[in-house]
Length: 181
View 1 (spheres, rainbow, N blue to C red):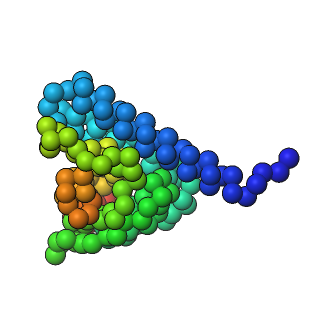
View 2 (cartoon, rainbow, N blue to C red):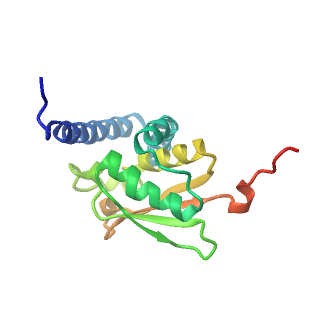
């Protein structure tokens, strides 16, 4: 039996849409379970972190990428390979510090909000896509890169773009290990 060439891409699109719909239901349930937006945000971050520490293995196996030599390369890899692979979008990357350890991923289109028009007024401090921050943080931690990841701008809150900030917490020279002699 042979498969049609477009079948895999079609299944991937269906899976992405199912994920987006399921994610919306998850956030809605968390909003029912928790009164405070901060608790929902923390829960989404924890869930994302758990996903990220497992997803990195799949990413490294499927992408066959080489070791990144700088924070800039790492940020580019996240944007150009990981986001494209798992969400089908490629955010632009900008460095936002002179020290080279702070980057922004700017999403013109965020697939997680395809079916969401706006946040309810009573949920103004909800970070709807906070799962993404946890995923990035968890994946980076598994490759020994401590980072703070947060939303800087969000289209659901009226901003022009969705922007995720990544701050690497150690200087590159702190990552180098001495060899035991």
